[in-house]
Amino acid sequence: MRTSRVLSILASAELSVAFTAFASDWQALNVSVNGQLFQGTPFARPCFPDAVGTGGMFDQEQCTLVQNNYTTRDLRILEFGAPNGKLVKSDFKSVCSIRLSPTIHWRSIVEPATKEAFLMLMYATSKALARTSFLFNWFFQKIDVQSANDIIAAFNFSRKTGVPLVVKNTGHDYKGRSSGPATLGIWTHNFQNLSFSSTFVPEGCPSFSPQPAVTLGAGVKHIDLFNFAEANNLTLPGGTDPTVGAAGGYFQWTERYVSPYAHELLQVEVVVPSGEILIANECQNSDLFFALRGGGGGTFGVVLSVTEKAFPQTTFPTIQAAIQNTPENQRLFMAFMAENMVDYALQGWGGFLAPSLGCILTNPTMNLSAAEASLQNMKTFVEGHLNGTFVAVLEPSWLGFFTTFIEPTDVYSLQRALQPVGLPYAVASRLIPKANFATNESRTELIDTLFPIFDTVQQSLIFSVAPFMFAANGGNTSVTSINPIWYDSLWHVTASMFWNFNTTLVERIGNYTLLSKTMDTLRAITPGAGAYQNEADVYEPNHIESFWGSNYPKLFAIKQKYDPEGLLDCWHCVGSKGQLNPRFKCYIPENLIRG
Image 1 (cartoon, rainbow, N blue to C red):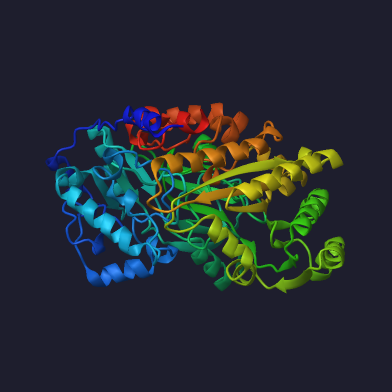
Image 2 (cartoon, rainbow, N blue to C red):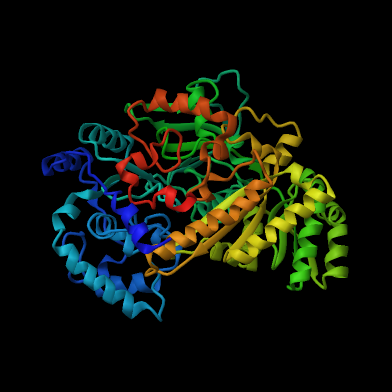
């Protein structure tokens, strides 16, 4: 595609600002939220002495802190305007990259070899910002939410002025749904409450038996939840990234080792766009509860807290199989795993597979001796045919498993590479149903399709996921709104590509296109399957079917009931207007990627 053609199409995607918020409106909002309205500032703002109109100021000490921690998550989660990755914005013209969203350029990686050039570029950009300071004075604001009333104020403000809203708790989002130019941010990271009840009964459910449960605020991170569980002799498994918000979009989807997270929810406290504070569970506002158990975050309301089932602390037998990394061994190992995956999943095994490394699997339903016997054929194959190693250990708790087998391992490093911090990148995924593992022919087709993908993209990782075993053991699959294909899928395949901050628009379009079209080969052999929305292609084809399947009509009706004005809108979310919404004009147009 010629550069002139690309720029011509993008030039027609001018971002229009369709709201009328005056200084007096913002001042009134600030009063109503007790002074908790703040101008959003770029993460690297302290490094620039002449960025007039962006808020904040030059601060050499803070600049050094930013530079030293630019590619780490821990510092970024403390800042609303510091997402982990620069993922979806096109930066195709000044209206998106300089005039309306300075954070976009400043989300790029600062490697030693490029730091000087980067700072020179940013200094030049800061000069341009000085000429457009009025646009920045009010176009990127956030409410540092302290109470539900602050969220209600945000809804009322958006309804009155037309200023679009974004919702962020903590952690990260890889599709730009918790950030955006010309928006008002609702930041709920302050809700850090964690409490345990041994006799929890959902409100309005007197016939329900009391059961152990944990209630957590919207800003609680996974690592905080794991530590709380350890201190209280509980098991509360979660995701593989310690900074993920345990009560955010993660729970409103799925993916867990023991059972789908959405199934463990007992109750949600949520502020809906009408301004009501609702309790959603199986006995009241049950339609909303259904939507929140798989419908996606930032769509139906703003969550204040969730209550989930708590399990007694249990042990986690865990195996790590490592192979000698040769092309032949990679293929042999993946073929072996595909042949045995149905049996392993039915026995309760879940975890990671990395073609170049091996796998890490855990199974809390077994003791160590049973676990070793269960995977004896893997041990024999890895050691006898792949010149590899096979280690089985018993971890005393989920936190023990996490700190031993997730954070310090090569698989964790690979996942960090799959989802790099501070680096512009794109990710895509696909669920692989049981049918693809059924015969020698279907397994060969799967392996033949996967390896060209592995060779094309920069990183890939496969998750063996829990919903399949949950359904196979008779679990009720109708109570969540996730795509039903989850319950018939064994693998969640992820792939990613990344690039540097100064990559040209044409090169970026090429990267997105290559990733999306490469995954088409996997889509072709998994008809009717889907993808995990939080790690899906930004330009996922037929995303409604892919994310929700037969549940979408019901979800759309619930969206219309609780948010009839569409105050909450995010990319590829239920009821999203997509690029018809001016907020999303800074995404590269889908027709340039998918054709």
